Structures are given as structure tokens and as C-alpha cells.
Length: 279
Length: 238
Image 1 (tube, one colour):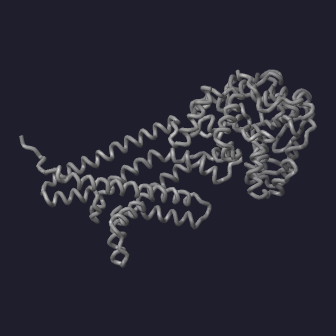
Image 2 (cartoon, one colour; image 1 turned 90 degrees about the vertical axis):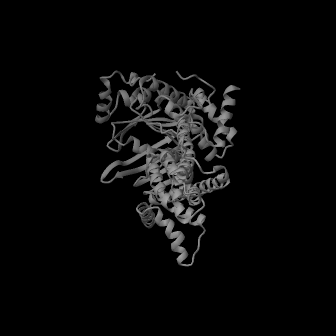
Image 3 (cartoon, chains in turn yellow, green; image 1 turned 60 degrees about the vertical axis):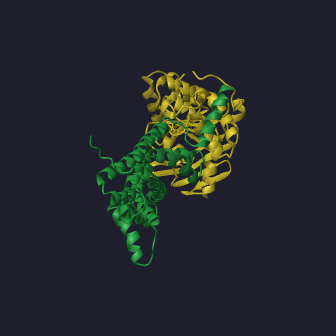
């Protein structure tokens, strides 16, 4: 398991954060790939300190929704607002300067980790610290080692990604995404490519972050994580948000038929609180 | 027992050393130029500008499909006949740069295409500006992918400097021809010249392989990365 070390983000009282300011606001987001409508008028607000889990069938639009939040995909219509700045409206992105700054505010952890294979674990983290934040190399190394310590990977600081397990790579990827202290951290099915033991390790790191008050949006099939680590669960189906609410309600007493079907499809594998090998 | 070695090689040693240095100078200058040109052309081939892509493609196809002697003769004899006289070093280097630049551009193009799109996205997601995505994420990975092919081209270029005998460029093969014309012992002379080429090329080939291995193992090559690794090791110990 991941050893507990001094956290960079100090734990905060979650109740105080639930009513924090809105950090991300999506209004009427539409995204098409050719003739296929992948997102069809999505409205979503993420407040400071919230952990929002996005659940739904594969191909339903979860990943595209996350990618629209940091503009790795440009929405065809709708408005994306980060804090009080409109970053994208009506399919047009603001000046390039805003795009670079936006991505510093909205970090992302990918399903397949996407560490830079030519760099060691510590260099994967010092790269954004020195080349984006303008930190000195010595300070960047200090910060990177602390972050690696937080995810239990300090001993692998000089290891190349190719020599790490999937779970180890994902923990380094989380540390890298945290390096610039983003306002919001997006997770795109972070444990889908992992074995149960690695999944438990990564979930443990994510739970620690959630308790620390990091604002997180997690596209996931881990209903156990969605239930006990999120403040809100959003069900996405065919590019629309069908239903959202507190995890207890969403996973045990959903209103919409499709949500019931989706949650029920996991029932054969155990109760909502004990799925996917999550710890 | 009869011997094939009759030439007084000791008296030719200074000339051979100088010719070897000229060969190495042709190799270093031409490879540096060809690698730079090849990288630029590869980037142009992948650019969104259609005229740039076409210009790069025409250059590549042109030089890939003519014998290497053609640019050598055009630049040295052809331009001289039109009033522009280049030295043998200038003409030789330019010809080798143009010829090997086309091959290296294909190697670099393949390498740039070999860096997965998700690596660009991961770098963008960290807030790196496009130029820094290219500089710190894409190019280092592409150069690693290009290393085997580019290393082979380097050795090939060193051997191809022998073609410059046709313009008497004072390199090894020209020196061999001179010694042969004095001693009339072609077999012995070209055997020795071949041995010198082998002594230059073989360590170079092995060196490129060793570099590939070091890069694969993640050994820091640049002084900056070596310093960073030392600092991290010190942090870990303290």
C-alpha cells in the first residue's frame, strides 16, 4: 500500500468546501466527431473542493466531456468557463495564451498514464515545474521528490516508466498532474488499465487527495470509489447528463431508467460499495 | 617468404594523417549539415502548409533518386563552368549535405511520426507551450527513434567521402590514388587505405550501438541531465 507522508495539500474540512466558488462551468456543450454527436448539450458545474464522479457506459461521452474541460477537444457549441473567465464559447477558443494558462489550472490524469518514456519519474515532474512554472532545477527536484513521496514513489525517482508497473506509472502521473497545483484535477478512468492490487494503490492515493480538498472530476467505472470518495455522481448516457446527485442516491435509488439499468448491470458483480477491487 | 608490403609507409605517414583528418572534417561538417537539413525538411514534410510540404517532398525525391556523384559534379564542375567556383571542401560538403539530408529527412520524418499523439496531448495537458512540447517531449523521443537509422547514415557518409576522389578533395582515397601513382603498388595501397577506413568506421558503428544502448537504459547523456541525476541521488542519500 501507499505509505502516508506529509501531504502537500493540507486536509480541509470538506463541508466548508462543498459550498466553495464554482471553478468550472459548462453550459450547453456540444461535441461532434463527423456526423456522430458525442456530447449533446451538457451542463455541469464543479465547485471548489468537490469530487465529482462521472459514470456511464463506455462510449457514452465521459472521456470527451473531460477532454472538453481542458480543451484537448474543442467543443462545437456551448460555453466553458474556468473561474470567472470564459475560455471557449460557441466553438471558438480564446487567445492561445488562455489555452496554455487553462491547462495549468486544469490538470489531467490519463487512462494509459502517458508518462514521457524518455524521462525518469522525477524528470517527468520537474519538466512542468521548470518549463511551465519557471522554478529553479533544485527547487523543482525538491518539490518533485515530495510529490513522489506523497504517492509512495520516491524510491523510484530515477526509474524510467518502462521499468515501472502500471500502478506505479499511474501514481507518478498523478504526482505530475499535481505538480502545478491545478485548480481542478481530471481523471480519465485512471484505474481501467490496472490490475486489482494496483487499482487499490491508485484509489488509495485518490482518496487521500479527495480528503485533502483537491477538486477532482473522475470518469470511472469504479462505483465503490464513486460511492465513498465523491460528493456528487453524474450519470452520462449518449452524450447527455441524464441524472446527477449524491452518491448514495445515485447508486442505490436512481430516478432514471437508464441509470437504474447501468447500476443494476454491476449488481451481478457485488454491491455498489464493493466493486472493482477498490480498497 | 614474399611480402605484399613494399611501400615506405613511414614516409607517407604525415600525408595519410592529414588525409584522415580531412576525411573526418568532411564527415563531421557534412553530417552536422545533413542532420540539420534533414530535420528541417522532415518538419516541413509534416507541416500544415501545402507549399512547404510539396517543396520538401520534391527535394527529398530529387536527391533520393540520383547517384551521389551527380550533386558532387554539378556543384564542383557544373557551377565552375557557370562562373561560380567552389573549393573542393565547399563543393564536397554541400553535395554530401544535400544527398544525405534527403535520406536523413526520411529517417527523421518516420521518427517524428513514431512519437504517439498522446505524448503531445500529455505535454499540452501540463500547460507546455507548443514550441516546448516539440523541444522537450517530441524531439527527444523522435531523436531516440531516429538514432539507429541516423547512426547508419553517419557511417555511410564517412565511407561516401571516398567519392570525393573524383574532385581530388585531399581526403583518404585521393591520398591513396596519389601514393599509387608514385609507387605503382595499387593492391598494397588500397588495402592500407581500406584498413584505415575500417579503423574509422568500425569504432563509429560500435559507438553508435553503445549510444543506443545507453539511451535505452535511460542513462543521462546531456550534462544537464547528468547534474539532475546526481542531485536527485544526493537528495535520496540525505
